[in-house]
Every structure is written in C-alpha cells, then in structure tokens.
Amino acid sequence: MTSHLSSAGGVEVVDAVLRTLIVSSMLMAAVPAAAATCAPKTEEIRDAQNRLAGIMRVQRDCTVEARDNSRRLLGRYYPRSRETRDTQGSLVGRGNALAALILGENSENNSRPFMSKCRYCNSTSYGSCSRSAHKKHEHIEDEKHCEFCGASSYGSCPYSPTRKHRHGSGANKCRWCGSTSLGGGCAYSPNRNHER
Image (cartoon, rainbow, N blue to C red; front, side, top):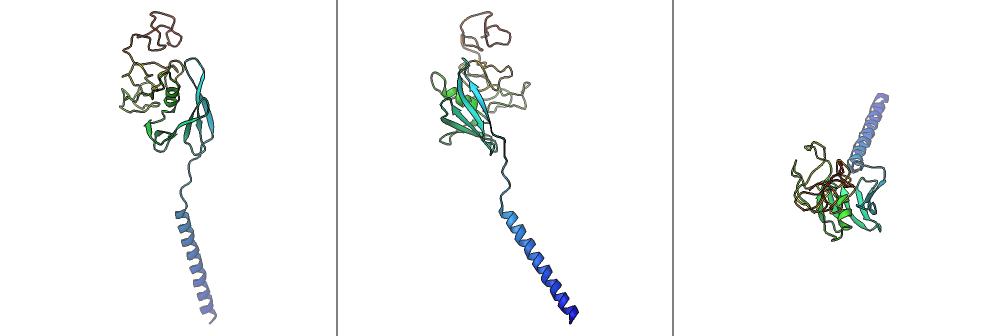
C-alpha cells in the first residue's frame, strides 16, 4: 500500500513537471524574439557652405530617422529590410539614402536625389559596396548629382572616400565644386585642381 502511494505520488509529480515544461515551452514560443537594440546617436549633415542641412538619428530599435534643419521628419532607414522610406512610406531607395534625402530637400530646386545604379554592383543604394575598390557605391551617370550619395550639393559627403561630393562628368563645370573655372583653386578636390 505504501509503495503504491509513493508510486502514485511520483507519477503526479512527473505529470506536474511535464505540464510545467509544456506550458513554459508554449509561453516561450509565444514570446517574439528580442528586438535588436542600438545606442541612440545623432549625426549632423552639412551642406557645401558647412550649414546644418539636417540630422540623422539612430533610434533604440536601430531604425535611423532623417530630419531637416528645422527638425521636420523626412524619412527613415530600416536596417532589417535595408530600405529608406519617406514620411508617406514610399520607397526612396535601397540601403541608407538618408543623407541624400536630407541634402536633396535642401537643394535649390528641391528635387529628389537621383537614383541611378552603382557602376560596380548595379545597386540603386548609396553607402557601402562590397565590389568597389574603395568599398563605396559609385554612380556616374548624372553630372547634377553626387556619385556617392545622390545629393545635388557640393562639399561634405558622408559616403565619399574623400569625404567630399563629386558629381558625374558631362557638365562644363568642376565635378568637385561646380565652378566653371579651370586649373587650381578647387576647395573640395583632393588635388586642389578643378576637374571636369
């Protein structure tokens, strides 16, 4: 009788443990995987005259927001899908194109960045390129926009290997500064010479 009670008690304990394990595993399956977290940080984007054009702000969920110099939201970059979208949710480009979005918003004609294709990998995005020798996408089809970020301005570029915008060739002006001058005196060219 005693052995029957302990055996029955043992079965009840095992049943209780199994029920606990099953419920625990069901609860664990119901909980979504922990979302990625990033340390919030802000980067200033400046135009050719070194004026603040806008900011890019990394959020805790790792998305990146672009805001103009009056802090108006322009768009977001979603690292999981590798897409940049404007405030209406429309696709701006593949990869992080927020700097181009900010600088495009602040250009004289307020045109959107030119979305051509990288000469090395045919991607429409700007930023890192695994096939390029300098590890940056390079778009060469348009003399009105920077090859590295798509902005229509001159000066500082977050994606250029030289950290300066360089426009595509074809216009009768310097690719680095937009001047119609020839020879030396370019403030943005690495060799200080105007280049067409």
